Length: 335
Image (cartoon, rainbow, N blue to C red; front, top):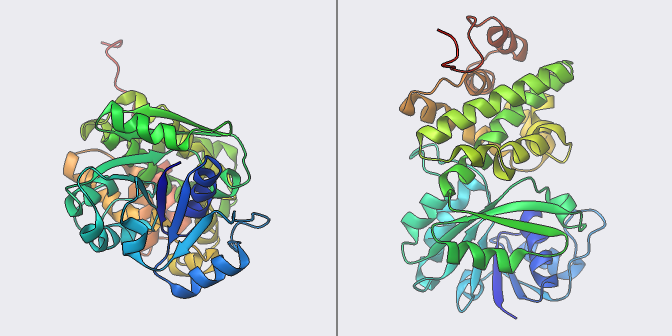
């Protein structure tokens, strides 16, 4: 039995806390909001996970020091916009080689860093890994079979993460491709906004399939330019996560996109979803990365135009459809 902590008590943090508890670990969960700690401790429920009871074996605390000290693994599950600031607050309590697993998804707009890079910058003494893939908290918390990827710089660290999380209903693969896994998780949220917008406009399955396929091409082109492996984008943290986020109503990004397609602003959509919509925060960073690495990303540019430049969803879709003709992929077969 190991001591592990969940840093962040949103739906994903709670779902993983339940999994780790049922795997035989002593679990502590931290939130910066005392009222949230009180509610979770008293009711043993998260309002966004209906029907799910939090085991008595999970302790809740508002003390970051208590959550971090003497823990074998810390699972960092705060919204991506708070990853750096929370990691900085953790620094006094992190020992050399302490395992920290990032399970959030996003890119920092100011620095264009992935989340694991931000954590490592703030906590250079830590051993940082990433857990990602098609994994809605609503389903993991109900023990619906799920498969994800643990990525780390060393096989030993990836295997440690695999050992902690693996269960009969939660299958964990390992990968050395941290940048590819992080990018797949972050950028699919932007494509899911596009898929939701198309639903909100009343488009059909053809449109969504095209957005998903061409969106994955954009993610893969950028990812490989940044050092990711092609196979990662065809795997669970690439196309797998894209499929689930673009097609499920569990997806807050798709739900927000539907509302935007129906005419709401990004802020109005996020207020109605009532949870953090990570794709909105990653969209500008994704477009900036495309420009930095010279990668054409028309779908991500279209999402940015709708979110920040005053374009209507219909105008952005029309611009995508009326772009200059081109081949689907570069091929040496034609001369």
